[in-house]
Image (cartoon, rainbow, N blue to C red):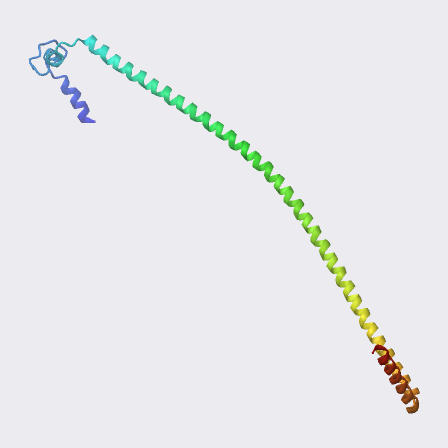
Length: 189
């Protein structure tokens, strides 16, 4: 802090502070700096007026802006065209999706009905096979019972015949049967 106050105090010791005087430092004066800047402008801008230079700069800027606007309009037109094409493709795809959805639902219903019909046919065939199997097993059981009954009846008849037949009756029956077979043989010849 002391340094700052010392610097203000030292400013008060200048004798020319606050008075008007001639600056003898050539590099620090404004007329020399201005003359150098004007000399450089005149040397490099020979025959070019400031208004023409400004007009050319503005015209160039105007052309760049117009070109940018034109390019933007062309890009906008292309973007709108692409957007319309994309919308048309979207509509087409949506229509196709709806058709697929409707066709899919129809196909699902058709497949469902086909599955139900084939299941009913399969069940009907299984029912027929079951009935045929039951009928076959019943016939087989009936035939087995008949065979057993026939065998038991035959055994009973043979038992009765064997108990009732004597040797003499047995020999007469055999001779009668042989005689019948002999007569049948003569008829067939």
